[in-house]
Length: 112
Length: 112
Image 1 (cartoon, one colour):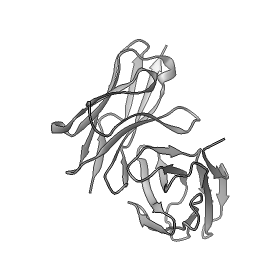
Image 2: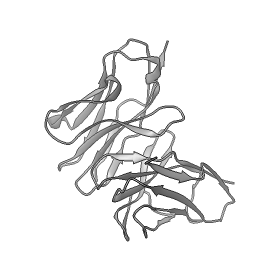
Image 3: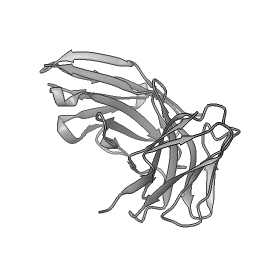
Image 4: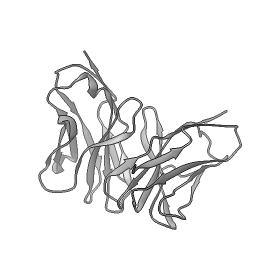
């Protein structure tokens, strides 16, 4: 069975700091990879996705993620965070059968 | 307005009662999903359906049931057999299995 592991449950950082959230998955076949964000009081929304091609993908709001197949990783990055990036971030994996697996989430708090 | 609606936003039930959560989408998506979100555990898949009149169990299907009689609707019943039903329930849909999911606003169920 596939699984998704997010390295940190809580991250606190100051505005303008760089952010990197780790995500590792275990699955032997072809996968699609996603990062979702849940801002306080809002729906889950897609930040970015990787299906194939360039392993460095860019998403909304200045986020990017790098797929490293040999490490089964899909880490999320942002060079300079803002207070509005305070949210919970979820990594997700789906196989060709369409069954999604989400990580436990990382709560990010950006202080002014 | 295209999207996913879940109703109600808050739901209270007495222990031992079955309760049905509504999920409707007008995105013409084939696949629909139900998740349960608990603090520190991320999203856990309850059931998913890739096509009308067909659905599969997710990771935590025990105590839940679903139906998919129409493409746009995927109601979830939380039965009295579910040992810990108090949670936040999220419905999602996608064009087909494996593509990005769109999420509804969620229903917070409290069993008293």
